[in-house]
Length: 378
Image (cartoon, rainbow, N blue to C red):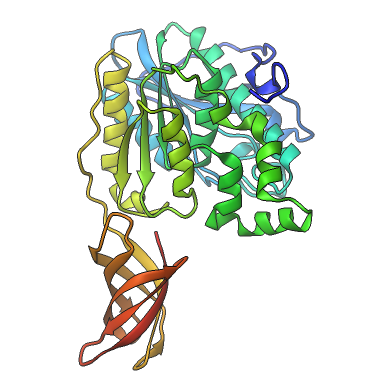
């Protein structure tokens, strides 16, 4: 491993004090403790966690839940926590650095979490992983929880943090990655959501290769053991451009035993089937934390929605939202989409010719004509 000996992210963080707290059954309890990693921002030095303990026989399996980048609230995480509670599993939702109540005054949730500065990225990741490990320390002090049955689930940025925590924290017994993977540097260099940050990096003379080397200390695949056998589950979006396919592939290559379920969506389209996705996550933890073998759903239907700008010889340029009704292959190189536009419905049938660009024919109510489409999948 071409890393300095004992990188900070692998070290057990310094101990922090835990105050007493009561955890009533069936009610979300907010608790907090000091972060073991110091930053200049007072708000970011507190680690809020939100605990839901179901009314079941104690001690309970417990899952730490990490939210996505820029989360404005914890509604999705609370929904997952309730699904887990239905299966007799407790949950602890942890607010990531610089998010929600940890966002410094004058900044939005997550605004300072992903910055075009490798040193700040490393500091954020180390703090996030240390906070997860301190959350597990707290879990181990509580009689409500079974410290031999601790799971971790993360979404998007939370999943990337989760992959790193899973790699260095042996007390995590099972891990679920929702819409996140590994190869952080390549994700930053390829993600459709990070165009502004990427341009700032380029202006500061960063290349992809230099970024890979600079972020090696916080790259999960550098730490995942080749004989890793703890249960792991990946929920991936087939047409994701926010977390590119290479990120998913990097994590699956590092964890070849990992179970995978593909959604026929982009990064955001999974909200349509969120309830079904969360049920599968709860089932994964219910089975895996009890020593059973989990089999992911063979199929979870999720419609493929597109935001697009179709152009044709009859109507010119339009903007609309479409639903895919046919695909040539699993990669969606060829597809047919029905669009709703300000001038009425139209269909596009074509083949990809570039990133987000396709050429083909547009079917209008009374005419078929040549067309071009730029689109992205939700």
